[in-house]
Structures are given as C-alpha cells and as structure tokens.
Image (cartoon, rainbow, N blue to C red):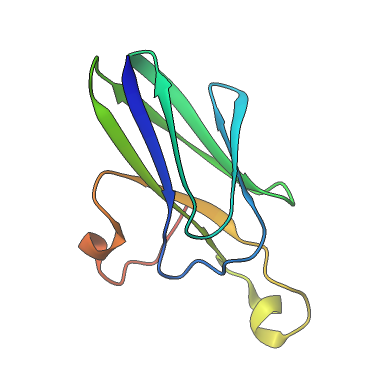
Amino acid sequence: MALLVIVRDHPRDIAHRYAIMSLDGQQIARMKYKDRFEMEVAPGRHTLEGKNELGKRSEIEIAINEGETVVVHIGGVPIGCFSWFAGIFPPTPSIVMKVGEGWESLGEQNWKT
C-alpha cells in the first residue's frame, strides 16, 4: 500500500466553504481550512478531484508507488472573482492543488486550477 496525504494550507485560502475531495470518482473528504486528511491507497495512477460546495472543480493525476507517501497541498482560492472585491457576492473559490512541498516554494505565482 501507499499513503495519500491532503493538506488544506494555501496561504491565500479564503477559509470559506468546504473543499470536497474525490479520488478516482469516489468522495473521500470534506475539508475546512487547515484540515489534514490521510488514507492508504493502492499503488498506481489515480485522479484526485477537488471542488467547492458550489461545484467549481479541478483535478490532477497522481502516480503513487508501493510504500510511498504523496502529499497534496490544496486551497480554496478566488480566481478572477471581481464580484468579491466589489462586495456584491461572497467569493466562490476554485480548488488549487500542488503535489509535493508547500506553497512557499512557488513565491507569488498567480494561482490557477
């Protein structure tokens, strides 16, 4: 077996709404800001999907080897959300995901899903 770890820790996460995570089409977690989720998975290729409660989603493909631990950092980040800045509607974040080390290694990148 292998270990999949998901950490919701993006520094620009709006800490609003759940991130609903699915692995290979099966829901595995509902995560709030600063939540950490771990599960054993079979080695091989998997599709990890993240979406917020309003349905915006993104997905990544991950490959996990036998005995390996793969850490995926996620965040609920508003992308192109003018209405939030204008104060018209609450933000609708997109779920961004990054495999490996944390967000600090990418500096001030404009996050995309």
